[in-house]
Length: 284
Ligand code: AMP
Image (cartoon, rainbow, N blue to C red; front, side, top):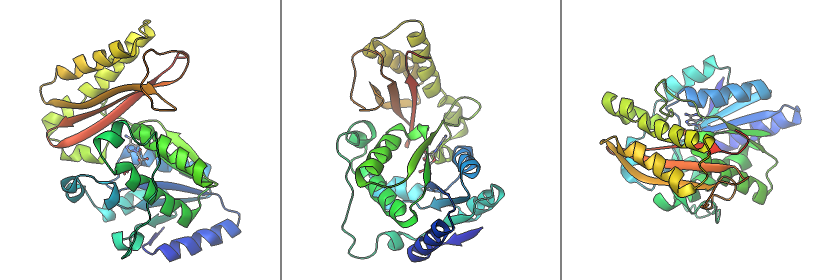
């Protein structure tokens, strides 16, 4: 395994691998790796000849400066984990390698990037779309792996891949959870033990809505209220949003018909903002 810091070196290496007809799997991350990330890496390892993982805490996608400062960073531990998972290359550039002086070109995905996380975190998806474009352009992977936990991010990345004509297939991997149901996240380490236990209420709320749907509930407002009522039983939880939207357009819906529907939530525990989601559809 080699750790690469320079964009140019990453690009020339990827070019060489493509000439050798190797399939390249790419897993973009911000480090502080947990089992969720490692599931993506595992998937990439099974599907591709070469696995490249990027570790880059992307400053442009943080709308909250404190969140950026407090974001956990530990390249040594991350690298040893990735070595165990037979990763071939880690791309870990410094911020000025990605955003050199005078940088002024950004990618903005209209529509699907504007609601939910986009509305709560202005500029977030501009940062995500920009860094993913730079990384895809640099590496030109055959497959790129993203987690269902960040459902809107998956939609945004699929849209930009299509619109900008990248020859990369986006693979979405199911959310990995802690034993109590809490979706794994690098931010979970900033929760107290008590908060971490109580944050499982988010998953319980989503599960209740899913159960109500299975029992015939189709009204989006009612499904949303079921999640809200459950989460509000936990005094430490402060709901940012709960949304019931079409999973492809991310537009709000009134009732669940034939399309896949995404129930997405963002909840604060103290200063830490957690997101999670579930998909419901008639075939379940
Ligand atoms: P991050 O380091 O938070 O930017 O996440 C990097 C990738 O890992 C993204 O595609 C995330 O959606 C994915 N990811 C994060 N947490 C999980 C999880 N609990 N299960 C599955 N994928 C995850």
